[in-house]
Length: 158
Image 1 (cartoon, rainbow, N blue to C red):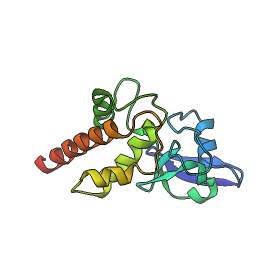
Image 2 (image 1 turned 45 degrees about the vertical axis):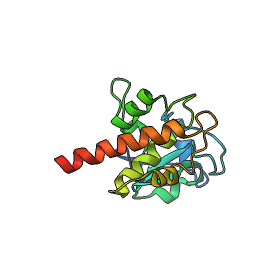
Image 3 (image 1 turned 60 degrees about the horizontal axis):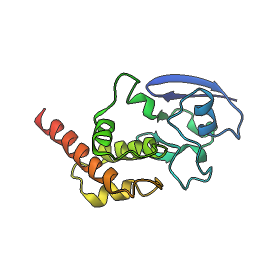
């Protein structure tokens, strides 16, 4: 079957099997920010944005993507440039092994798009589906609050 959807601002047409997951497809085209974790939608390592909402790619079958918009972390950075949230995570020491970091960053991107006034509870709720065994969430939450508030400040000043 052939489906068409938007991937990182590019319209793609893909021939796929009905049982293929978005995670399998993304890894096959070398988008490695989307990690293969639990395969059950419990760890958040495969988080992507689907129509601006954070979702688990391991639970999405390719045929369900027809006409939709998918974003991965590759949309927001290159090897030469990282976005402000990534930079804040690095400066704050919020990245340990890094396996969960792409999922966290996309969950926070969805939160940033959704809410104008942010607090610690919002950030913790957004990160709720992203399992991390290294950080204890203290530094990621602090970094996220700092970056999200700076982003909101820039929007208000413009």
